[in-house]
Amino acid sequence: MNYKDLEIWQIAREAVIEIHEMTLMKLPKFEMLEEGCQIRRSSKTVKSTIVEGYGRRNYKQDFIKYLIYALSSNDETIDHLETLFETKSLTDQIIYDDLKEKLDLLGKKLNNFIQSVEQQHKSKK
Picture 1: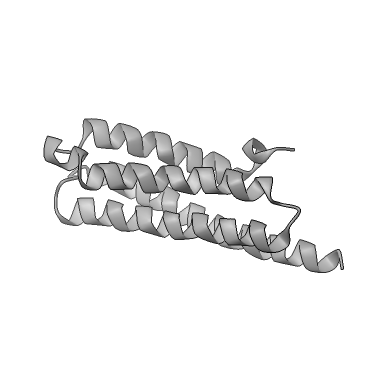
Picture 2 (picture 1 turned 180 degrees about the vertical axis):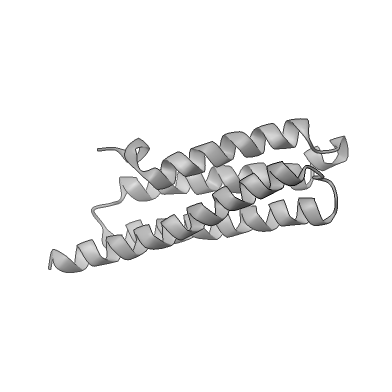
């Protein structure tokens, strides 16, 4: 098994692609260097931090720390998405709803995964 087999990584990857496309196609030009850049960066951080944590999976505290970083970056991504929608830079309700649902699901799955890692490490002792 590798990180690409993790459902959380797969959902994060889909979110990165959809957010990238949304920022290129649906945002006004002035947002490309402001909030558009921030949401792309935070969504990519979720995915890459899952990968980095997976690489440290033999060390419980490191693994959990990176998964928590990924969860925090996912929360940041949600905040950027909400800001874009609330300021009317993103006006497509369907894209907003789909991305929000995906990011909320990812947050729940990250939380569940963190709990699972904690339990697996406890059972090995």
